[in-house]
Length: 313
Length: 274
View 1 (cartoon, each protein chain N blue to C red):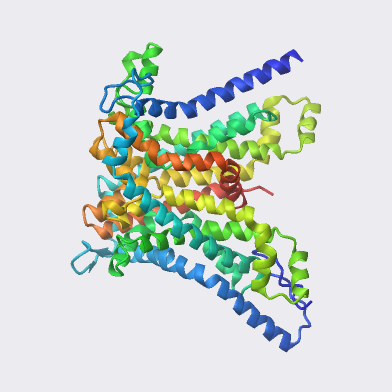
View 2 (view 1 turned 180 degrees about the vertical axis):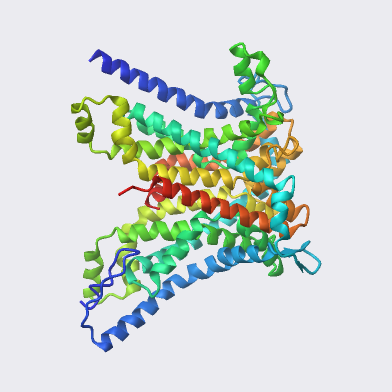
């Protein structure tokens, strides 16, 4: 009986009735302290192995340190290097280009497919299982598979030859101008299914009377899509864009096995350089600063997406 | 009637086209893996003689016995530990109204957007000082920490969806908070926990950057991270590389096919509720 107000939804603080006696208040307080004991183990591991390292990275980013000798204070030098160095700046730019292929194209494709397929139910389970498959695979294996597909003799070139485009064939991941785009398309392949499955699931929840209303107004399929489907999928679009954008910006596995930044540093991404600077070149401060800048870019993009897709009153 | 049927056919044609686009890469490496080791092959070609020995050769060459063992040890540590910790924390955050619970929830959720790149450097140097690099314990604790935001969030949403009357009834009966969790909530929470456990296994199996940094000893690396270095050594032997890739994706694909509902709902719903 005493606890009617403690069973609450997460994130919603209960409104406390005004007239609680001091004794009951104290008992409730001690109970709320005991409740913390349940959180403590998770919080300790999380703080010790995720939060503390994150803070530590920020500190390291202000140091000049090779990982062995005593570190010296570097101030903002490591950050300055990011914007002047011929390697670091481009890697950030590459990551932003990848957003187009990992996030923008998959979301657009997902929306197009949703408009096309809405209402189709038979056999969808099988298709869903197939479309979603790339989501569960280790990206290292995906990368190796695509190395082979993009190979001189691989499936992509074989397909191009089959349709008479012999002139365009090349070792895609080794092409100075096209390697980044080729890499991006692997992301398109991997992420489109996620977007489609998310959007189709969201579209199923749309009240069909809304579509009838548009039809009565004389609206066609295009109008129906923009007036009903698109606004209704706001939440799913936000989520899909956030997940895929983070995957693009923080990519590492895929790049590491496919191009390793090459050819001639045309496909370097921040994750790759963080690893290289810290563990191959012993420039811990520089690696930490790049990791911090990368995180800030992730936060800026995630915030921007949430702002853009937020419901307007 | 006829137009609707044409439309339906067109839809299935588009769907099938997409499905083929997703599956072709797999067909390509399966066929490649069945060619004789080191053979010159092209795109999609049926091997003249089916060679199964690539799998055994790749297993030996990449030392998959050790890699798979490491993968399983790490997953066997991460999955139960992360499940228990996330469940306990989420139970409290969702139903016990802990002091500062709101702020704690936010603190966990913030972790969802942090890239691994942000934590990996100090993790290496700090864990090395503690003797936890080249150690299963180090990787297990680090992965548990990184997976915690999603797990707490997932279980918290689950517990919050359970009708409050159920908890009330137990409280009126005088059950203590831990008894309520163990006797009342757990029996109806297995679907949510199973899904989370499968996602944890997948993330642990697939984890790459963290493992190559924290495990400098090649014998203690996991299957995908071992594969990442195997590419460098055998970059031109397509059949062998394809077989190695199939070995690494095999277990996760089998799990996915058995539990596809959990995987799809876990990733999509987990995302949407956030």
